[in-house]
Length: 280
Ligand code: FE
Ligand code: FE
Ligand code: ZN
Image (tube, rainbow, N blue to C red):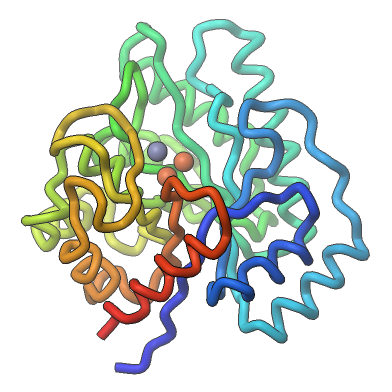
């Protein structure tokens, strides 16, 4: 099978879209992920139409068809404090408006933390936020990320993600991003039971909801609920499992994004080369 392998890593967005396309191409990637703004929140830089135009040309040249924008991870639409929820809503609405400068792409967010209010309340608050910001004419698909279940994080189970999506009116604009470290830490054995995990995903959420994969090994054993990423093959999941993951029939056509702990672009380039070699 010579199906396209869509793989990239998380890049800095500090120098804009065109630079990200160049950075991706320089390491053999044909996709990339970036934070829409400082990951701890704050104001986003204005989008430069010239940069978007330059990006379009470079993307066509380099064969980059998709990318994944990531919301700041401190954004919490399930917060107990109304002002924290309001901030999340404004960030979400602003990010989704900005995403329409580059139509038909994907925007990933952590569902949120219920901070002691209980999962049921938290799930309702996340769904309320999505119902407030999603619009029928939007071309962006919003992805909810599978979480490790650290603290009061929502989205540790496929059922919690399904509960959120079931309450969203425009749910055809919503998908799921599966993070291999997070699901492993959440207790799903993607090392020795990948088929079973994906069957469960299909039963609970439907595989048509699955739109992207975060490729991360884990520093911790199955079910640890820690969320500490490790380089591919350096952790508890192991290199063999990642061969199976990038080749699995249910996953192989999806875009894969490395969020592994490296310091410099060439290191991700090496990891991408290893995964390309593992791709049958
Ligand atoms: Fe994430
Ligand atoms: Fe992730
Ligand atoms: Zn993580």
